[in-house]
Amino acid sequence: MNPIDLPFDADEMLAGLKPWIECESPTHDAAAVDRMMDLAAYDLAAHATVERIPGRMGFGGCVRARFPHPDMGKKPGILIAGHMDTVHPIGTLDVLPFKREGDICYGPGIMDMKGGNYASVEALRQLIRAGLQTPLPVTVLFTPDEEVGTPSTRSLIEAEAARNKYVLVPEPAHEDGGVTIGRYAIARFNLRTIGQPSHAGARLKDGKSAIAAMARKIIEIEDMTGPDCTFSVGVIHAGQWVNCVSSVCHAEALTMAKKQEDLDEGVARMMALQGVANGVEFEVTRGVTRPVWQPDQSGTMQMFDVAKQIAKEIGFELNGASQGGGSDGNFTGNMGIPTLDSLGVRGDGLHTLNEHIKVSSLVERAQLIAGLLMRLD
Image (cartoon, rainbow, N blue to C red; front, side, top):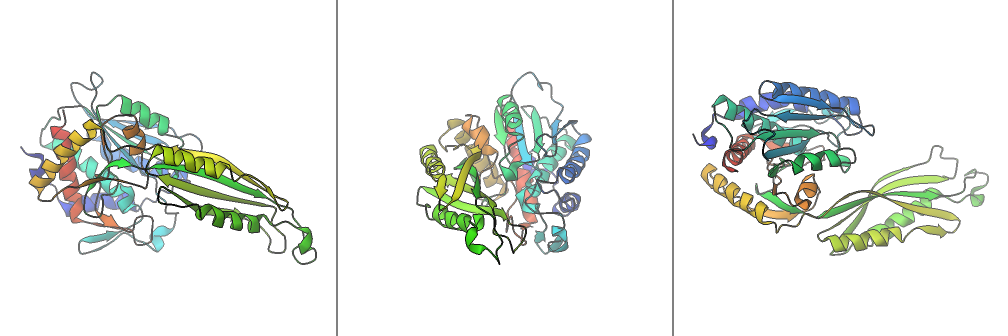
């Protein structure tokens, strides 16, 4: 039986996905992420041996599911790697509720990346129901911290990937439905300015504003953006009282480059900004880094050729390209393990209050994943 002919049903899949979307799971709320992992574990338990791996570093835990196979533990298989954390805080459902309008369905995390994760689970479920045995053993690993750079689970992902021959990552599809065959490098930085407090009304001139200094640094940092390396500041925290000149300001910055050498140069430029000016100290410390995953690995391209043939049978042309917006595929691809990323659903508005998917793509992507699971050997 051709896997694309399995009885995938978009309405049934959306009904199964709804509880996942309505279980909000922002990265920094470990209890919320664990509630989401409970739902995923329950949906996987009927067909796989499920483990709950405790969280660390203040993050939620993981779910690892191994599906029955005569070669499980005996030879490398296929790893499906996805994250269950989202960027949306608790309460986002009040303004972005799960809502379907024709072929569009809205909800926090529905595109990035619960929709793709659910399509992967459904692909495995339908294969098992049909009595089809994948050529290779399959493991699913859902993690809790990708949206902040995977600080607590990178080593686990890499260890699991090393046991496998292929890695599939159901992150959101490209706009044209294409997949990712390489990703740019990303580095994060923690920034701090240290000023001098004073009363903002009575002794303003005695103070040295950490906020003002940080504002100037933000402009300087973002002005370093060029064609080979980008710089942006996305988080800033400072101040408690408006009548007090701020003494400390914290911020977070991100730099991205297509080549590792360009990222390394960008990191050096960021670190060189440290120092004292006008009585305010500026500190830069390295955060997590995602290495370049070059789109030139033969194993990945062979996987891509298989995926293109499956897509043709489904009825669409599958393109592949490198892109930014790092994922855990950076790690596995950089390790030299054949990796296909962006196998998840089509949609738009990820990380916004307009996040949505095309409902019909749930079936398309489940067919694509099922096809890969049956043809990779």
